[in-house]
Length: 314
Image (cartoon, rainbow, N blue to C red; front, side, top):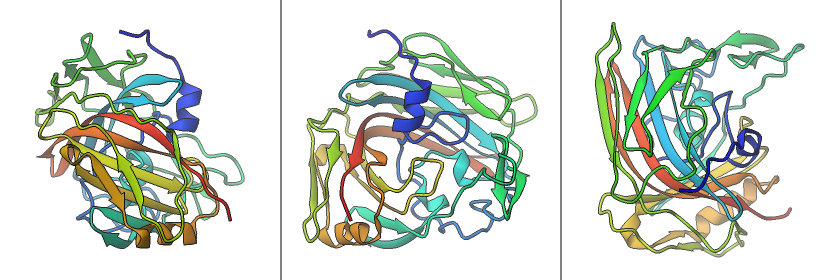
């Protein structure tokens, strides 16, 4: 077991963190079937107060890796809406419009902006809308969340801004095949339990990709042994999170495929809209679980993500 790494500032820059919770760009494309964000209930984009009374939540357990560093992320959030700033960045369906889709990939554009720079800088639990700092919809405190299957017993507690975290964690959180269980027994809400499986570490021989106009972009990897594991590729352009990406590509296949190909048409669509490169994305092997809960849903993602920067020029 490698020693834990305390890399909060580095994580914010490399992993594209959102809000105060520390953000790993890791997880499945579970929301592709949902409507894109348009200022309505799904994203809470108009004033951060949208919602229908249902509770939506998630927990992610991710080993985030790159050539020089690796560290573990165990965190989550529960609230009365699904505002994009409260979700991992791969949930592009809450923020952007699906412009085109081919094979296993979706090209996202027209992503909703995020701004804390009103006349005064907004606090971490607010966003700037029309020059006015407005609070997000209230987070929901469901009490402690127990995580089993990690190197040590782990309990997630909610902080003052509504994020759930475990503090400093080991850089290696699981081995392939390890059962991971997340459970909570809120005093006034339904209990829930989610289960996923630790995956083989994702490792690539490079940390950046440079798409070429008119050419498909190919990713190859060595599959793990879990039949249920999947691999996701997220490519982004624009300023680091929480600022909106100019354009994004999100793709997903079964891990056993060992290869993912982004069609040339989607590569061209990405390059036509991109002007700021080197925003970090990832390639990630993961398993997941999801349950309907309290009128909404709760999700669990367990994965190993390798940071990828997208290079290019205009």
